[in-house]
Image 1: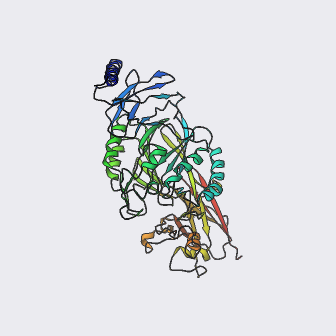
Image 2: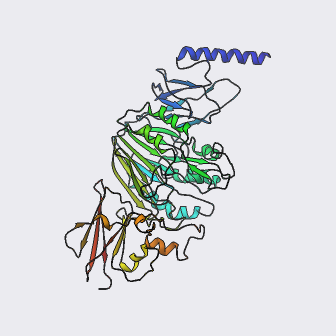
Image 3: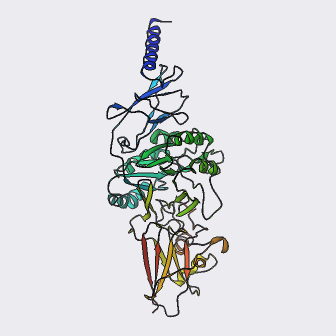
Length: 500
């Protein structure tokens, strides 16, 4: 042994002994350690993980673990601490583990205390899917109205992008991080299928570009009385091309989540961000490992799952205490201004008070908040049926209520008369209509040759189950629809009969 190596060995051994004396959390077999301080003082009970191990800091703020090749160590930031951000304004709750010649890697975290949030807002965005050639559309059509919308949300705002930040272009991940950071909102990132490197045929390696920019693909933080969890529900193979993947939360993540949740009181609100919907109200497809996921959170007071991927809006009630909201896409139907269900491309806001969700609404990019439905006169309404043509004889009006769920109330008023509730049979149900119910505007735009040039696959979604038909009286002059959501938001829209 050389003198240099002997001295290094002695110093390392001394460090191990010193740390062992400092904290009972350190074991001599551990190779990763650190200290968490808040306002310069050690903090006990902070949850620390490398994605496999989950531990907590001791009374002196120390943590340690035996890690094996993991890229990041990260904190479940306590609710009374500010979520750290990097130079781009992105959440920086993690550090890249430095594996060097020393046996022990050390990563300390310095947090700043803030008053626990009693109320806060989550900005939810799904599927920006920025690609080469799309950055100008993103800059022109999304960023200006998004900045204006963020300015209306007040203080204590966080964001989450629910996957497909880019479209098979890993080199643009940094661009997206910088641009979304310019909103001034710390935005958490969920990995989507298009965020993987399609040239790497390995689930554990194809997300390396994403991890290098945004950190771990699954993690948690605490905000107010809410515990926010991000999961990766894409198992990416790419053996048969870029779309060769499964919707699947790996057992490794589920084991990690069980450990993570063991430190969370049952009365906390659980928010889970994923890319592919774990369940779908209107079609049978779902994440194949959704049942064990639901089992892990079933004991909590309220669980809100947020997802994207579909490019249209719907809500799914999974259990009395588990609800999933799937949002329309930021990019619309591949940079056409409508999503596949007729919703405008856009984003959403969720407002939390304590451990309760007290408001939720979707806003089209550049649209008023009250724009929540589109009414079609009979000559256009007929297009909901793919077998019919525009202008064919039809006796009903169609209203597409973008974010309708079965806990909404929908009413109609004809010619200023009293409101009456639309009967259940007024709703178009795809499985009773040959499996296809199309939004008329989407059909006119995406089926008649005006498909966006950069993606010929854009088309109406078949299982559009948030449209309603109403047959007005002969000689009607005006029909109004009123939709009330479970948070008390009331949206009204009126159609005038232009033939009179």
